[in-house]
Image (cartoon, rainbow, N blue to C red; front, side):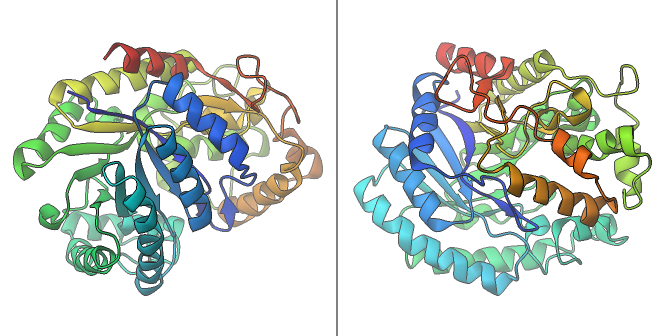
Length: 392
């Protein structure tokens, strides 16, 4: 039975200098968490981000609303020592909240550290790590597991000295974690074409092997035809969308190009499909529920940096896992354009023109119709998840 019915909520993860929540307004956060509880029918929320003040503010709001909070401090692409010091500061800060809500706070030691922290595999950032020739060889050999478990043991002790509540870690399926110290077995586990038929059995194995409650920390689907084939790699459609109107991108990795060839197109462009996202997310929820996981967090509630555009060539929301489609905000659009320009140059080796950059923003200042006070509109997946959670 799914006891923790949750969703991921991003208060500002930071990748390659890009803040995924550029406009952090506590009033908006409060309203969104209220919607998560009352309209999405969640009883738990996984709050992810880098800035500790943001994490604490959002967690306090969620706890006062009656939600169980899984706090996930995430510092990406730094050394293990820097990450450990960050976790110590986070643990001390979160302990104050735990004393006020002692039964409803869970602390995460991190998520997917093999990819997002330096030193477990070669590479300074996540894209370098995934593109090095030795990456898949080392992963298949399990070379990352011993240093990962050594770090987790150090992190657990450092956090336990400062935070006296429930502690876990959100792993990747290819990380062989020593779960003996931790209170929950937590895995970020997306379904894709390779494991479509075995997804339930793969998750069920965690229950039978470790004899601890299992929580799926991230799962979901992007918003376009064929997204179910890529699962957790679905965001890579962004590279394909740029190729649609710019031609071959110089820095595109061969594995990305291979994946993009799997996806259907109409009139030369990818196809937005909210219905597919809704079906996929609810079907995965049903699978997870049936195999007996303790809880699951749909990834993710909102992605403000992945803005919707009626022109499918520039519809950033297609490559997003969010349950709502975001509209561009006037206050953050200039910064967002700079981020797009920098990312295109660094990852794709391309120079976008001012005209191309402007098209990425879509309708600036647009409001939702379901929630006129919000700069987003629920997608079909929002309504599907709300219905599932309400009925189960």
